Length: 437
Image 1 (cartoon, rainbow, N blue to C red):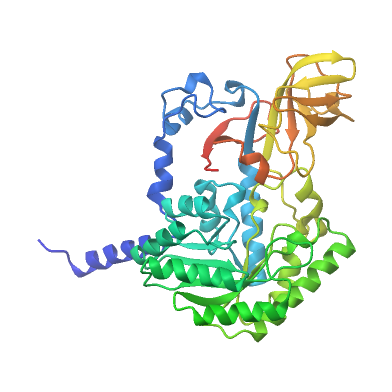
Image 2: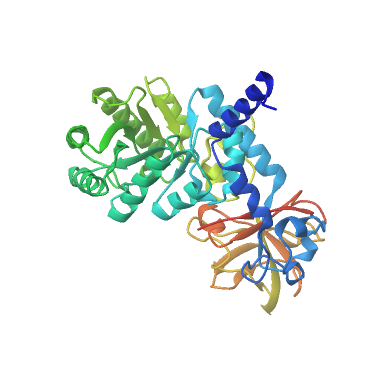
């Protein structure tokens, strides 16, 4: 028998919801079937041969894992995702968190489910990961010039009418190269681009506002491109939240707002995008009232840290109505040597932890609390060792460290255990997060 009207309507609603999903749930869910073995340095030998789902059903705890190890805290992840989602919703702006921070589709899905509009990525390999997991709305915070990559992008746009893509340009030559490659690829859908504005001493982006208008005019002349907005990164202009740094950010954002007002776009709703993880409050203050889709790209908030971002986050300055982000990442390292009275060597180093925006801070010794590391500090990292000074620790003790800068911590781990409570005596491992860096 054929389906009745109600059954057909139900099927259509299910199909509509599937089409509207911002990421491919089946691809993310399939990660639970991945086999565990020596390829993942966080995985203990006892898990070899089991799938992620099978191993989690054994209810492992942190005691089952060796060192060095990086873990994520489930409660902190939930808190951070909720806080940023509610803040951006109240501010009336869109969020496309920078996926390069975690390169973890399972975490991207949680951010998207909480209300994020899309995911930002930084280069072609990351973009291919995003599309492998069906991310629907993508901001490429970069200029895509590779002809083979542009040909692939053109095929992706043709294959999936629901795929929204936005990238940046900061030179007339970039426009010409993109147009040439897309013509050669036989592109049928135009690629949306934003003119990227930069600043003296910053990173990429146009320094001269008049030149920015010339680049915009070149985009409008290119049949394979479509002028869709203005974008940039204010975080490259200030390395701290001092009055001078914030003033530099404010001046830059006002330049961006002025440029936006002068451009003639080729889309109904232009995009104005800025906002790393340090000054997104200023982005909202300056750009929030524009007649545009204002898109923040903050990425570090989901994991946060116990170093650089803890010191500069707007939530640390009272933006979150008293709520603060919590560091969701912790490193665990074992004391393997006490060669001098005030020196201990741990079995975690540069290949496990970040060091570019501050060294990790010692927080506690498992089973002994914070007293043994009160006043202690990590003074250096080698490839495989951390130099811990002035700690009351013994060989064999496991020290919890609070790293700085999640972008350069997570990239060292292909599989990261998630614990229910990093402060518990014996944290339970409740998930395993797969990354692609």
